[in-house]
Every structure is written in structure tokens, then in C-alpha cells.
Amino acid sequence: MLIQRPENIFPSEITPRPLFDRRREFLRLSAGVALAGMLPAAEAKLGPGKPSAYSVSETPTPLKHVAGYNNYYEFGTDKEDPARTAHALRLRPWTVQIDGLVKQPKTLDIEDILKLAPLEERIYRLRCVEGWSMVIPWLGFPVASLLKQVEPLGSAKYVEFITAVQPETMPGVSSRVLDWPYVEGLRIDEAMHPLAIIALGLYGDVLPNQNGAPLRLVVPWKYGFKSGKSIVRIRLTDKEPRTSWMKSAPQEYGFYSNVNPEVDHPRWSQARERRIGEFSKRNTLMFNGYAEQVSQLYTGMDLRKQF
Ligand SMILES: Nc1nc2c(c(=O)[nH]1)N[C@H]1C(S)=C(S)[C@@H](COP(=O)(O)O)O[C@H]1N2
Ligand SMILES: [Mo]
Image (cartoon, rainbow, N blue to C red; front, side, top):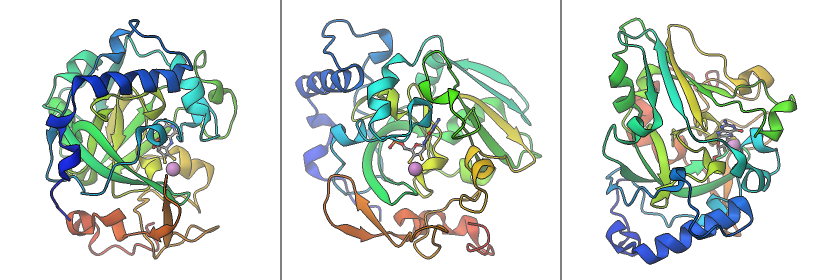
């Protein structure tokens, strides 16, 4: 599992020139025009993160797919919609309110969150419940580093992640495909697991808007929909949060949403997946390949019932 990263993508080899080209590429992708020399503050590069032992050794999915094939329903339900429309997302000012069952509730400014902990590069698999997957080189830090700031109380059992609603910039929120804001949740021990991260960037740069700028959750052993984008509030609670997907179809989307090839979605199999950019399918792995690290979180649970 914890295999060394391949030589060809070591961060020290990422030179300023390709970084510059990539940023132009995703500006082009997100805005449809090249805005050379007009990078807003929010586009400032983050630079390479510290490599992590949690990274997988698989080849990352090309940026054009990572930033061009997205689920972000606030910006439309087609995979190409977010790359076309998410440039409008207003990224500043941006704060994250952290409250609920904590000793020190806080509202943190995004500029302070960016400086909160050293950024690590985490190359993770992302498996979408619809049957496709990617490998993404995220930049971020453990969710635990953020929660530490507010000192969770012993009574806190769950963490609720609430994401942005900007009706003026998000064409999707006027439709009722989902109950807005998009809400997700984790048990607190899942949120504190070192694999669970807050991502602020990918491919050595800030997050493209369509991938959840300015900050999002990434929980690599769960289906992609657990990883809420553009977070504005984090609430610690003693009750299991009601997530947007559970509200829309509770028999299809459970609270746990662990990647599990043995538990089919009611309408399709989860046994195999297509890696975006590849032709043939591959077998889906238990806990998306992270079983060694996370299966002990679920001992004694019936994963068919608590799916
Ligand atoms: N706010 C919000 N977050 C979201 C979604 C969404 O529609 N809105 N889609 C989820 C789903 S279904 C997936 S698979 C991942 C996709 O992340 P990516 O586009 O960066 O690959 O984001 C998740 N986070
Ligand atoms: Mo998804």
C-alpha cells in the first residue's frame, strides 16, 4: 500500500515553467479565455507540498480530466458544466465557521487556514459512486489539524461539513436536484483519521474552482460524494448529520458510503470502475484500496446494513 512515489512526478522536478503553463491551462479550462498576467489573488500558487507516505504510486490522472470532468451540482449536473461555469465562484472574502460541540468555536479566514499547517502532497485515488475513478495529487493537511483549533468536546461524535451556496454564481442551486446547501458528514474518528484531509490545492497549485476552491474535504476510502467542496461551516454534533444525498435517496446513499465492491448500489454493481482516461475497467478495491489503514474503524459493523 504505502509504496514510494514514482520518480517522474517528484515535486522538486516541477519547474516554474510547467507550473505556469498548467495555470494558464486551467484558467483556459475554467474561464474559456487566457487571462495571462491577470491572475487574481486566489490564483496564487501554493507550490509543491511535502511528499506523503500515504500517497499511492499510481500515475495521476491528467489535469485536463481532473479539472474538466467534475461533479459539482451547484454548477450543473453534466460532467463538463463545472469547468464551464465555476469561474464565477466568489472566492474572497471566505471564512469557515467551526462550531457546535467544541470548547473554542472559531471563524477562520481562508488566508489563515492556508497557513495553519504545512501542506503535504497526497496522491489519492478518488472513486465516484457512479463507477469512475481518478488519481489526484492533492495539496492539503489532515482534517485533524483544523479540528484541533477549536478543541472538540468529548460529547462530539460527528462532524458536519456545510458547503457554500452562492445563488448569483451557482446556476444549479435554483434547481432542486439536491437540498442545498450540500451537506456531508463523518463520524469524528473518521474525520480524525490521518488519511482524511482538507485540500487547498492540486497538481501543485490552488484548487480549480470546479474542484472545490478554496477548500474541500477529501476522504479517499469513501465514495467521492463524501468529499464536500467549497466548505463554509464545520459543525461538531452528537447526532449523525443528515446529508444531502441521504435526504435525496436514503436507500441508495448511506451515511458511511465506504467504497465496497461487495455492496452494490441498488441500481448498479460497484465491483468495477473505469479510471478516467483509460479504456478498460479495473476491479474496485475494498475501501478503495485503503483497507489496511481504515478497516479497524468499522470492526463489528455489518457493512451491508451500514453502507
Ligand atoms: N458542494 C459539492 N461537493 C461535492 C459535489 C457536489 O455536487 N457539490 N459532488 C461530489 C461528488 S459526487 C464527487 S464524485 C466529488 C468529485 O470531485 P472532483 O470533481 O474534484 O473529482 O465531489 C463531491 N463533492
Ligand atoms: Mo460522485
